[in-house]
Length: 379
Ligand SMILES: CN(c1ccc(C(=O)NO)cc1)S(=O)(=O)c1ccc(-c2ccccn2)s1
Ligand SMILES: [Zn+2]
Image (cartoon, protein in one colour):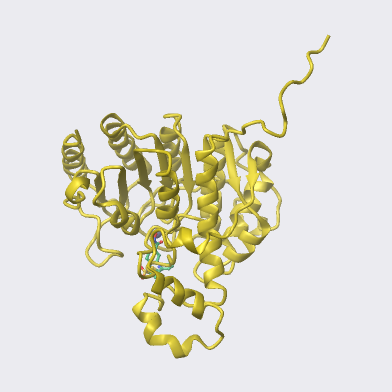
């Protein structure tokens, strides 16, 4: 007769945890620079039926103690003070001191937003610590520019640093990979002097382009020397150059550093069609990079980041979510609340543009050679 179903449905360790709540999405929707992006990403993931294949875990607010594990008290106290004031103009000078100006606008409920998005990353890290999943996803996280004492590049609290500090409670060697268009300076600076956290950032590096850091020569300091890797790239890079470069460098990193856990920031502002108008990547290029990392079968924390073409960002992160769950999803965008945003083709695919590619084969060979030379110095 049929064997009794011995799988305990409640405790079945699902491979993928997806950190989500209505409140988290509602708060993240209010971010001025990416209005409603959180809703668009979640709605598309749900419309594709992907939440069925993941354990949905509710986030919580990061506690002040958790936030102060990285950030300075005066900075955090200031955010808390002004984020519930309606006349924040009178704090203008102090706000500027903390980087809270044009590119990191003050807005109502800023503290709640910053602690919820970072609490979601901490909860995702805790799920990996408890070994109840292999992959934990927070598309409302990935704010890689935030510094310990100031906001920067639309980033207020560095959820990535807080997530890594949480993972350090159990793991000895942590690999951070940053696929965003911009250099992951905030995370790099937090761990540049330690050999326990290796940061590898692939980004646009050009005079005058934000944040201006992340050169080839930027390799870490003291005990952290060679545990900071920067791969500076130029406008127009396509999947066909980006993906092999990323995978070859990460392969060398895995051989030498032997990470126990991986944190991957999947910023989508390098996609073709992003208003940043820089790289010429597609969801498939980023997907192959994430897939390469997931094949290592290590606990992996997957985070969002930049991405200012909102429908392309949703397309990309839905595709990455499907990839993490091992599910195929159809190219037709399913009907849902934001369906109209995916016109005129209503397809999942992000197509490369015909932007000029400034990355010559010679340039990429030079960068690759220099990076591998540095990595090989890791004992
Ligand atoms: C504050 N800056 C940012 C904004 C976002 C990022 C980012 O996405 N980092 O990952 C970095 C710097 S900034 O000064 O370079 C910009 C402000 C507004 C920018 C913008 C916004 C939309 C389209 C094109 N550019 S870039
Ligand atoms: Zn970015």
